[in-house]
Every structure is written in C-alpha cells, then in structure tokens.
Image (cartoon, rainbow, N blue to C red; front, side):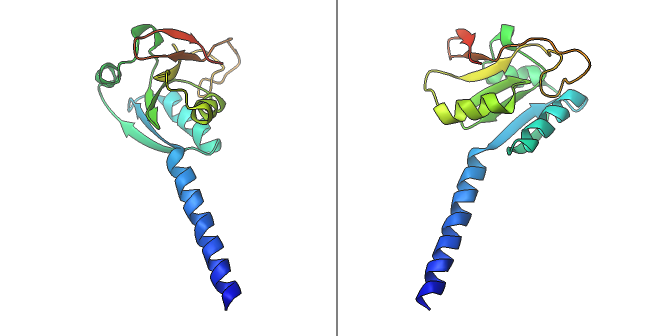
Length: 144
C-alpha cells in the first residue's frame, strides 16, 4: 500500500511539473486574419514545444502601440510570453534562451521586417538576420 501512495505522489508531482512547464511556454500571438506567414511562425513555435494562443485582430498597429514596440523593430505580428514581447519571426531557440536567462533589463525580442529564411518565411532565399533585444526606453542590441 505504501508503494502505491508513493507512486501516486510521484505521478501527481510529474503532472504538476508538466502543467507548470506548459504554462511557462504558453505564448499569445496577436496577428492579422489575412497573414499566412504568421500561421507558419505559430507552427514553428508549436513544433518546438510552445503552446500557442492565437489572437486574431484587425488593428495590429494599436496592439503594437499598447505594447510599446519600438517603430524600427516592428514586424507583422506581436506576441507576449512571461511578460516579454516577441515581435516578428523570432526563432524558438531565441525565445527559449530569453526565458532561460530571464534578463530583467529586456522588454522583448524582435526580428524586424520579414526576412526570408526566418521561421515562417522559409523559401528559396535565406537572408541573414539578427534577433534584436530591446528595453523599455527603446534601446536595442543584438541578442542572437
């Protein structure tokens, strides 16, 4: 009987850990109803273990304004995860790095524009692109 109780407690603990980890990797994506690359980026995130909450909005510019996305870092969709902003086609590994390091001075990450070869923008051409971090004042630097 004692082993059953211990087994149950271990199983319950595993479930609790998985739920907590899942909550940490839930990302809310604000996107246009007409953008196919945004859906592809969401698929990229899901394939990398993120739970995606897709919020279709008709006025993305107001979302970007409310979230204080710096104008030069804007892209086609805006996401929020664990208090960080994610703007554009940021690769899942960069988001993982952000969540793991949890820097206090970073407001978010961006891949400005829509560079070919970034997640969701795959094709015959692969442009070089940087993942940019930015703070609340709009100061930015290369993150990855």
